Image (cartoon, rainbow, N blue to C red; front, side):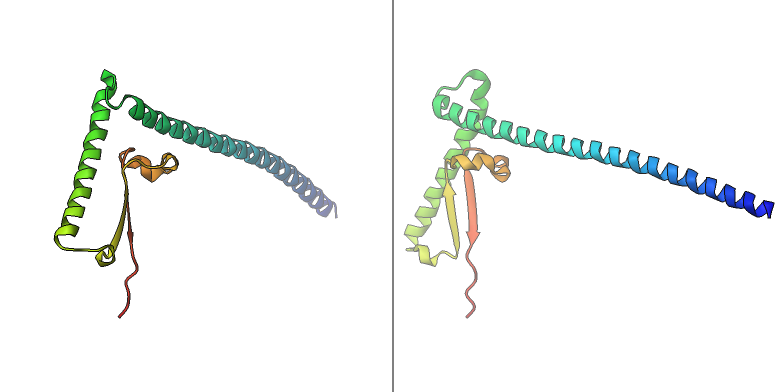
Length: 150
């Protein structure tokens, strides 16, 4: 019976040790989870601040172009030139569209794809990541009309 009592005591001691280790592991896991959650919150706050900076840069660029676009400072001249060239190409394409329409007597109802082109986008365009991937001073939106089943 003494052996049974020894086995019983060893089993109880082992169970206590396992329970103690489990509690320690659970506490460590909880602490690690709190740390990771705090890091995640900070990273989200960083992303929000970077987004605010990106929007401010966009507005700054637009403001610079509006104020100094005709006579930019030397470091900005190349970029302003790229914007001017893009605006010129957009205007040429708009003129070509109107020429094709007038030559062929095409009305808006004849056009299957509605094209909405805005040369200088609204301020909210700076909030749109897709708009920033385009030239900031030109934005083209093409919306396809649904096909009419006959």
